[in-house]
Image 1 (cartoon, rainbow, N blue to C red):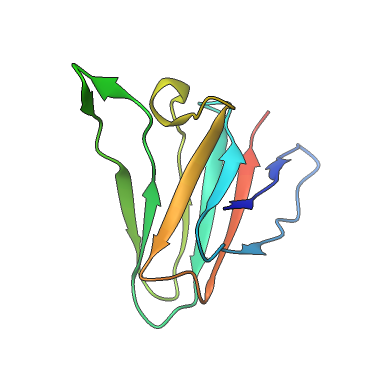
Image 2 (cartoon, rainbow, N blue to C red):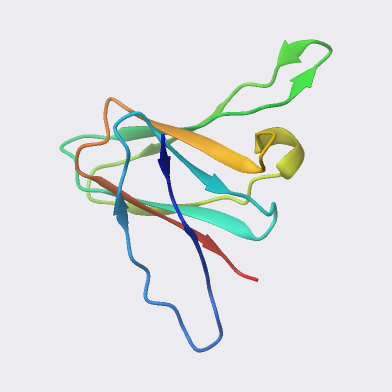
Length: 111
């Protein structure tokens, strides 16, 4: 998995720089209500962006969150509650289907 650096939005502004989505997925640090993930889809079809959940309830895994991002669209997704999405090292894992070609991403926080 690729490591996406989280950039902080500031009052003076932030020029967002996008990274190519990782072929096997990506991960980014998560502070919960302050962290968002931006996906730009330049692929030839809709891309399913899956955020892997880490939580279980009564021994049952909580379903992963899947967001379908249509072709030529730019979506901001989040926030990500830490008790549901964070791994042991406070990161969110994300995958792309059918693949990452033509997809660019950025992780942002507002504090």
